[in-house]
View (cartoon, one colour):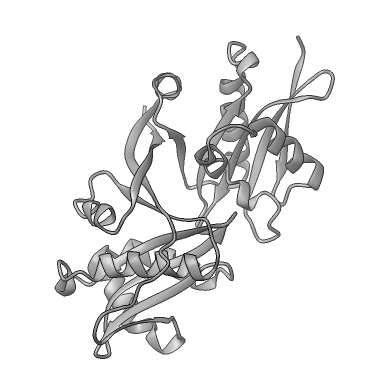
Length: 282
């Protein structure tokens, strides 16, 4: 059987996007997210897809990579139709990813896959090692919720930049600042600030994808932790999803983050474990 590979840059044309949609229909929603389906046809997106076709023009496998924060750091994943998984197609897709990443001046990469024995073994055979894992939590919208006392949540304004940058540095480190800059510049991401009596105590970035509200970059100031602000932000986000008539709220947190029980207290349930793999130095 003859198979051919091609590479298409984002934004994908409508027909290619429909072919990829048909290929992964019926797969878990997390599979779509790892393949960056929300970016396939976005004009501003930086990424590409590797496509495997039969001689009859049927798409039977694909991979997709995206530079999520504009720093030549790519995340990629792949999917192969069940009937074609013994033909080495996954490895061919990975080779196509590497070829295109090199052409684009990639500085770093992560392969992202749902935790699975077969894919774990395959990535190990390619020289990758698991760098970290994230738990993906989801919660239903919350019909009623009010912030307590003097707490308020507002949209970011330019006047807040200095105190927001300071909070992010204190909570993480200097490496988070380019991510913050990207979140502030992306028109589809909205940065929110939680304040109490005028003092900034927490922040999070929200975006909407396919009737889902994604909450990222949640950070609570070190001197305000263990005071319920993180849980309050999560409950507020669930209520916002209800107001926007969305289906669910999603958030991801590293398994090593000791704060993840806060999400369960706010009504979130773990729906998947995602493994992030890095190529090992030889």
